[in-house]
Amino acid sequence: MLQLFMAISPILIVMIGIVGLKKPATIVSAIALIYTIFVTMFYGKFKLENAVLFSETTKGIIEGAKMVFMIWSAFLILNMLINTGAMDKIKEIIANLTLDNRKQFIIIAFCFGGFLEGVAGAGTPAAIAAPFLVALGIPPVFAIVGALVFNGIAASLGAAGLTTIGGFAAFLDVVDVMDISKYTSFIHFFGALLAPILVLVILWGKKALDKGIVKFALATGFAYGFFMVLVATFVGAEFPTICAGLGSLIVAIAYIKLFCKNESIPEEYQYVIDESKGKSTMPAWKALSAYAILLVALPAVRFFAPLWFIKLGFAVWIGITITCVCLVSSIILRDVTSMPGYMKTSFCSVFGALIAMASLVALSNLMKTSGMLSVIATVIANLLGPVYPAIAVIIGSLGSFVAGTTTGSNILFAPMHYEACTILGFNIPLVFAAQSAGGALGNMICTNNVVAVCATVGFKGEEGTIMRKVFKPICILWLLYCLLALFYAYVLFPAA
Image 1: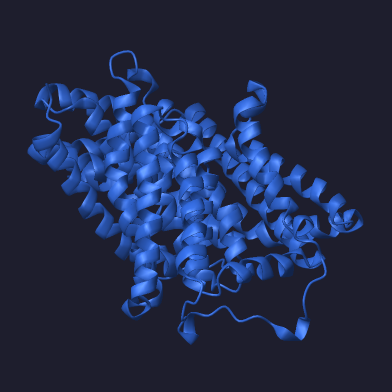
Image 2: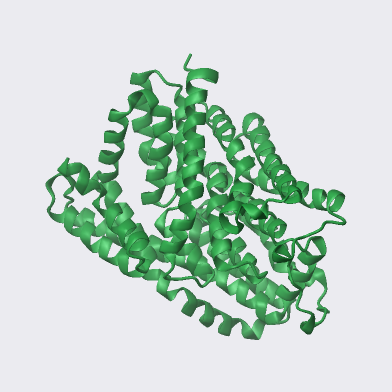
């Protein structure tokens, strides 16, 4: 019992400090890291050699700094767009499509965000889509919650398939990756269908669900899930989220054009155009150049860049790509001379996040290496064997909460799931899929993800508020995914 308590104690410190006591993640994460270092220095079961302790802590700090670099690049592109007036033109373009804030929110956070996660992963929707929403006038809390919840649908088959292919690489000689991909999409289909409506209710309340928005949300969610299942079943793990994001985006725009020409929008959800500024004279292509180039550059770099460049790490190559796109766009917008100022301003905006991110990633490294995470997962699995497929969802979320990525969670727990399925007789690819789907949900409450997205929209120090907001949707999706995992494991896809 003491061993289990010591294993979960770093998580308790983070959750109590941020969510319970409402303290900034910068302070809580540093305290939690120092505590975890002491545990791994002196507590027998989790004791690490000094060299390993130093190595894992240093590695975590460096990885955290890399993630802050990506956040900095997102701030850089946003500052440029705002100061050049390009964002004002983008607002006009979106307003011409629809004046309904709710539809704008779904299109950018869900559809566009899903595409970004598909091509790049590593929380790219938080870095690009969330600031985009804030610049459109969406409240920061809404932008953050949307980016986190919708990323919980996208991440399992994101990062051009790395989450699945890399996460279960050790078992792909005995388990077909197409089966894992297929079963994962079967779970996420229902999450995609539910998520847009769920987020609208969480943020705007039940009153936001008039007949028109419900139809739009269901159509978009169904399109997202349909394209995900189609591609995951017949193509593979590399493209489902990319196609789901793009496919749902096309369906959403087509739906608005066909069925929302004379829509009546309640005043509280209407996007208000600032008439005092007048119409922007900037050509649309110029205003959209940064995002247009990003849409091409991110997948191009992901699939065609030299391997050494990709091996720098997702946060690094994404950050470099966004920075280069920003520099190219500054030439198009004729604002190159202002770039040093934007760089300085962006650095000041993310400096506070550096301590939190570095501490949290280092803490997760120590928990993984010392065996704390394995102790927690093994106790859960041993207690609840008959409902193991459902437990795999929760374990996947636990892994992402601590490790910071679904890929890391999959790598960490795949061996345990394989052994458990061999003993208990469950369908191995299905349990892997439940693990991965749960891992994606874990991204919604993963502390370093919350810190990162708060930093990108200037909402630092309010991480506890966000985690409380996200708790309701993740509980609903946990219940749904656990029930689906059990239904598939016992009824539709039992082991042969």
